Amino acid sequence: MDIKQLRDGIDEIDSDILKFFMERMKLCKGVADYKKEHDMPVFQGGREQEIIDRITELTADKRLEKGTAALFTTIMDISKILQNRLILADTTEHDYPAPDFAGAKSVGCQGTSGANSEVAARSIFGDREFTFFRSFEDVFKAVHEGVIDYGVLPVQNSTAGSVSSTYDLMAKYPVYIVKEVIIEINHCLAAKNDIPLSEVKKVYSHPQALAQCDSFLRDNGLKTSEYGNTATAAVKVMESDENIAAICSVQCAQQMGMKILATDIADVSVNRTQFIVISKEMQVAPESDSVSVMLSIPHKEGSLYRLLTKFYVNDMNLIRIESRPIRDGSFNVMFFLDFSGKLTDPTVQAVMRDLSENLETFRCIGTFKSE
Image 1 (cartoon, rainbow, N blue to C red):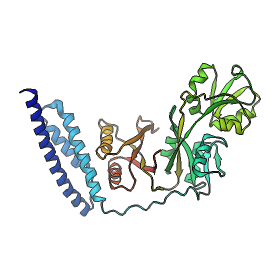
Image 2: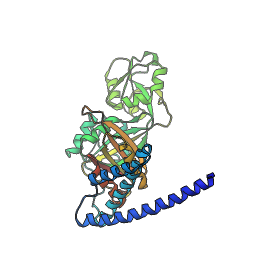
Image 3: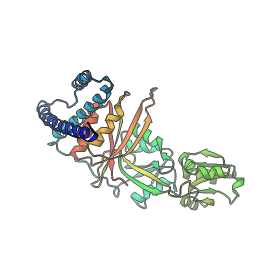
Image 4: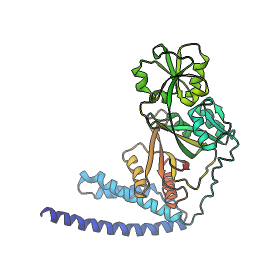
């Protein structure tokens, strides 16, 4: 056969595959009705493994065993989400409260006045008093215990990447992301006195800020030391008689009466940080168009492929994927995913129900308007 005949043959078989796929999905609708009527779970591991074993055994060319297993696994994943969508079709929507940023009695962030977290908080909550905490975990604790209504924390920087401690704490505390905001970061090097760079013994700042200004620091031969926050690093400098400096915002330096030794010192001129607002309860703003979840997947081949396929076949864009070690002595990780969609959408609900039924660890950690 020539190439055209071969391709015509493939097209004909593809049409048959599509026809049988649609027929299979019709049968799955019947299965969904039966499971709904008899209050049965969509996921039945024994049945799924039985199908995979049978298909693998029927695969004549053993080199294609993994391929046929992947094909039918994907078909079954599509089937499960379809069944969940049908089962949830008549479910009453959850009545989540909307965030009340204007009416918030108390808002907290880490550091001290002049910190970038305060700038982010002010962009949401306006000109008001904020409660400052020593650490990120103290902010999480205060929200979880109801001491404050909302907490504002950095989660990602456009230059230095993710703020890993925020993700670790999201896994530790049952709180929810209700908003995100992105602000421009303008780092400067500031000291108590106007001294030459050559006389600066050490530069203090948050690890993220140090990473964002790495080229400037190396080019000027400046030694560094990590500190909890850019603003608290500035306070340390102002309280010291040594020739030390801090990387902080220009606003912070001016607010504390510091001498600015250098401006625009970040490696990349466009330097932005994403902040999240957390709440003790799930809150859903009408304009929310992104959902954030955390989950762990089995440590076996194909697990990540199957996870990503669920979002692809449901036309959901994955905005972010982060992973953090679970810290239980294993090498397993916790994944944090942000994906497009409204929390109340039936398709989103179906995907999340599928994930919760199939994974040992799954939790929705919030919804927000993606910036």
